[in-house]
Length: 70
Image (cartoon, rainbow, N blue to C red; front, side, top):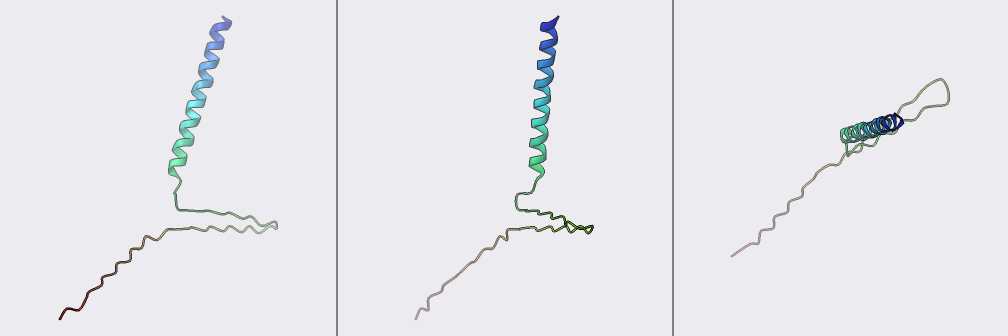
């Protein structure tokens, strides 16, 4: 009977690990890649929260040079 209980306990631990890893993966996938968030709490009774978002601007520069022909 002890072997059976040990097998059940091992199976439960394996399932817990799989569920936890799946949860971490799912939550990590929800995080945006370009955003940095900083939260600061003041020591006094007033609470200050600062959120800074860093975004990447995709810019394309196109230059065309035309030579004058005679």
